[in-house]
Image 1 (cartoon, rainbow, N blue to C red):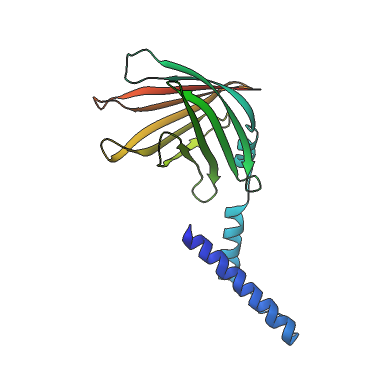
Image 2 (cartoon, rainbow, N blue to C red):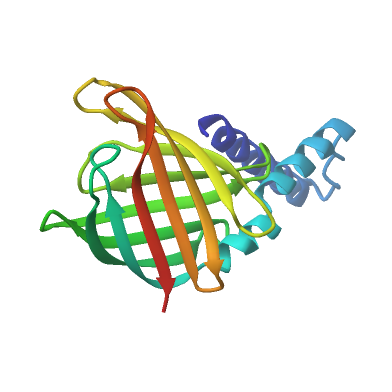
Length: 201
C-alpha cells in the first residue's frame, strides 16, 4: 500500500513539474515511453471499479439480523437479533457495513469492509468490533449468484496466535442473505461457530 501510494505521489509530482515546465517554456511536454504508458494503463485499470464492485453495490441497504452462535460443536446456540447498514464508499470501490447487536446482554457493534482487488482477481474483507482491538483479514471468491467463500484469520487472545476461519455467504432469496462462519474447536476440528441471517428492509 505504501509503495502504491508512493508511486502515485511520484507520478503526480512528475506530471505537475512537466506541466509547469511546459507552461514556462511554451514547449510540449516530453512523450511518455511505451513502458511508462503501460505502467500508467496498469494503474488506471487496477483502480477502476467494475462488475464485481457493482455486485457489491447491489447489496447496499438496511437489514434486520438473526444471529446464532455456538461455543462448541453439539451445544445449543445463543440467539440474538440486530441491524446492519451497508453503503458503498470510495466512489463505488468498497462496501462498508455497520452492525449493531448484543452479546449475552452486552451491546455489540461491528465495522466491516469488503472490496474486489482488480490486481489479484479476488475479493477481500476486514472486520473490527467492540469485542476486540484487533483486525480480521479475509480473502475469497464469489460466483455469478453472489455466493462467496472466504478464508481469514484473527489473533487468539488466549493462545496469542492466529486462528484461521472459513466464511461463506449465500442469497436464499433476493432479500435474504445467510452468512456462516467456521473455525477450529478446542479439539482442533472445524465447527460452525456463527450464522447470521440478513433480511433486507
